[in-house]
Image 1: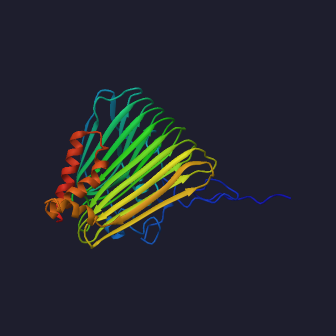
Image 2: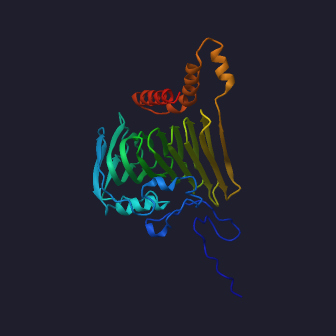
Image 3: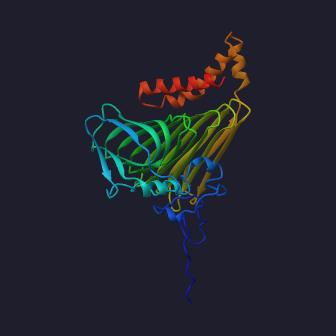
Length: 386
């Protein structure tokens, strides 16, 4: 008697009695594989579709321009390449229709390559200033085996932007990628970061989101070798009417891999909306994986909204560590009372508490001038909402 065949479903990590993952790890480069979102879908239910300015339904037409300035030290190659370059799209497929649309619409991509075994003596600075209109972009950051690098992507200006940043961290290499979203108040940005982490490699992502009308950023990590380590850190300060959404996905598809996810947000002002979705998959048949994620939010005024959703799917019993946590709330009155009892005015006490709240994360930025700049911007934004 012949056993009936079993059709594998999308996102599957196995067949038979193993449950199927509900998280999107497959993706597609074909925009037609994704229905036009209505806002009722799970992956879009927190995003204000009407504010995407046509990115979601294909009506947005590429008519914008960016001013791009890249300062790279010796050992780094910077190229502008066409759509047919074989390095594009190799770190991960688009997980939603907007990113797929960007992939099918871009004309040139920027490729930054760090030579094998090269430990850079200073960081790679990518200054991207959006100059209005709509633009689709692709970036590739390729850190060859045993190299060490810090890359800072600083994004300013206005307009509508969508695209991907593909990251390859070679065997034994170390990369810290700092992505700053300090867009003008009317800007829209939908971007997916895809990272492939090789054997014994370390990838650190630090995301700083301060500006923009709507920012939806999706960092995703998978492993190509055992011993890979990924750390995703994020800071967002969401003000009046802003929508800041961060959707991370760690796919522990190989044994003996590690990840840590830490995002902190502060919200102040009418209709400020912060969203954090943290997805972790520990794949079938893996052993020795170690993962933990957490999200914290400070709601500084009553008219803000936070949606914080950690998701952990485990398909094996051989796990070294796995956990998640999320918390949202107001400033701790005890901390404020302690400072005020020592003669510090209330406004200054609030600033000190928030500075301390963000300080550990900001101190992870390995560029001193950028640390000072980010803290100054946080304090200016706080002062503007007092």
